[in-house]
Length: 637
Image (tube, rainbow, N blue to C red; front, side, top):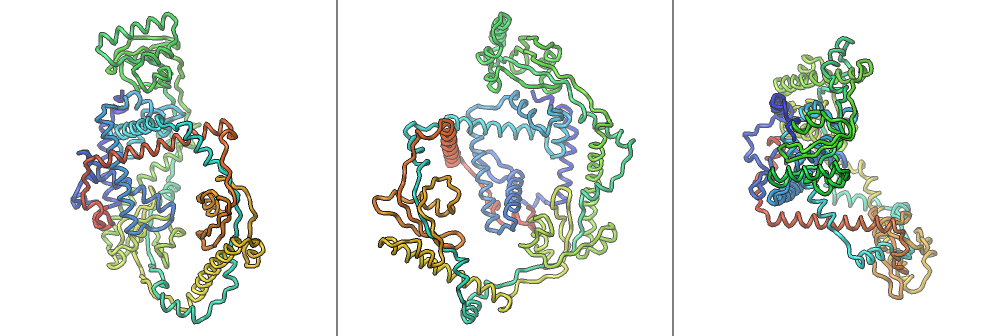
């Protein structure tokens, strides 16, 4: 079934492999002979490849840095590697169970799924040529890509099976609704540190004493002055010239992108479980019933062995030439709309086919595609120039060793400079990229004065850098940090005063006193009693969460001190709890909530199932996987 995807791919797979090898040396200088292992772990004898592991680690690091805009510490990097490996081990344990159970996604199902991926479509329809080119661009072989997609579909089906089997007993769900839809009557007092700190006077002696005792807290951040040369793909693309003749020739090369193939919408009934003679007899019997007027969709649901389509009336969707196996495709593309043919024998069994619709192919004319062609042509040419310049920059800077002036002259590229470059304040200089930090503060660049390796900021932006000056971390003068210390001490004192006022207010309320007047006298704010739900938004998050953690009052009100994340202090007063009434919840909301709860329960069950498989699996992890020398910039990865 997948032969159409793979046909003719051998030559460009070899090119892709060579390209990947070349790129790895350009950008990372990886020497695989220095690594002590080729796998990250073995699960029941099956390897998790080192390359797959490192790729996933890099993806996670990039996401972390994009989210938090900060450098990963060594400890955090080790923890991230452990988390990624543990997830891959659990995934491998699940896949191992799937394999031992004998379950496998059919080629038909896999093919149908791949055809729905938008990146492989032109005008909403699958393109085999685009499929091949996209895989080539990513350095993937069809076999490797299809194997990965098959595994992901199998994992998804296993997860979905567990989710779909999860349920809540009616009495459990009723209790859940009663708890979830509770209403609670609360009042609270809030003492804000910012407000209280305005009236706090911190003595000079206290500031000086704090500075003397905590000098290690007041150090300037290490920084460097950098020189760098960059190659930017977008700038190269703008300079690529072209003519109408060039674009016309390019149009002929890329014509497949501007044409839609003939597409045929089909259904089938597959007979696959049994010997050939039995299957053909069953198929003939079903065909007789169809010809007698019985509904094709109902018979597909009753007879078809294709689990991916039988409950959809055998619907295969829209199919183009080259996607299916020979006899099936030959028959389908010889049919007229409404025809039913069969039994058709393929490697998968016997099929009865119905053709529901045909959309003829067409070609977008050159003039209509000209603007898109121009952009694509510039990008294609720029990509080739970019990699050529990147390679030249890497080679020349390596030869220059510890200076970039000659490289700048030879390549006619500007030598740029950055002053006071810090680990924590570089987002305005470069799109944040840990590779820049690792290069700038690496031992070779920082201590030995060497040019860096080629640093990749994104797919079409690379640079080489060197340190022009280094400013180590140093003690900050007292006058420079005095105001900061005074503000910090004022906040500490204000927080302590806020706590004392919460304590005093609690005593007052327990003795029957009135809270609002006291709170306002002490520069706090008082919120009168109000009924809240879990979804209430106008109450501070910490106070709302605390109100639903408390037990139901038994006569007397409950008082709870709440320390806010920003240092503010609050006193929560819980007066009453009203149990939720499931009958008052609209049916649509109840159904949605039941589905959410069942899915959440299913996720817990799936996680537990994966954890159980992990615990019983035989797992081997090479010790060097978590050795910093193994994955640091100086150690290869």
